Length: 125
Image 1 (tube, rainbow, N blue to C red):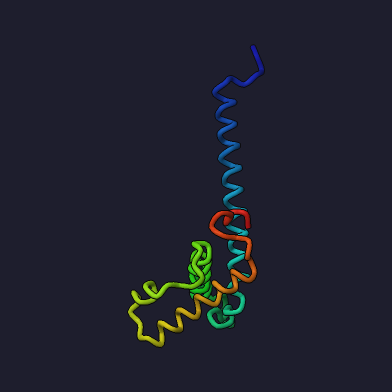
Image 2 (image 1 turned 135 degrees about the vertical axis):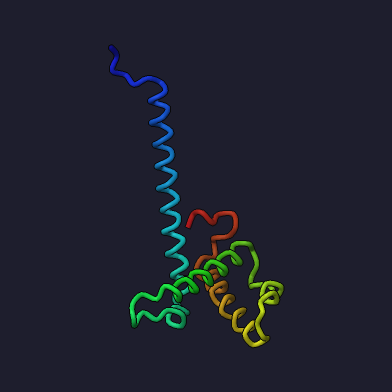
């Protein structure tokens, strides 16, 4: 009897290795993006996150979303959030201006800190 694995077993092992490798790459990318977003939003972190009574998950969620919106705006090639996006919000003019400024701050910071990352090479953070 031969000790060599048959062709189907080798193919299964190869596919499993590819799947594991793809999952590891995806996890590494998530870690790099999370670090970049945390760095991007570090200036507004104290405004949204209050950890005095334990971990503030709501504040961190808001901050994460601000960072993601800012990152996506910058990656899409725009310099700032467009007025049509803010115009769809059911807020008064002052609140819309505040939201626009809160998001445009990290967008500008993204361009300063990560000038070489655009929509063509986002995945090489």
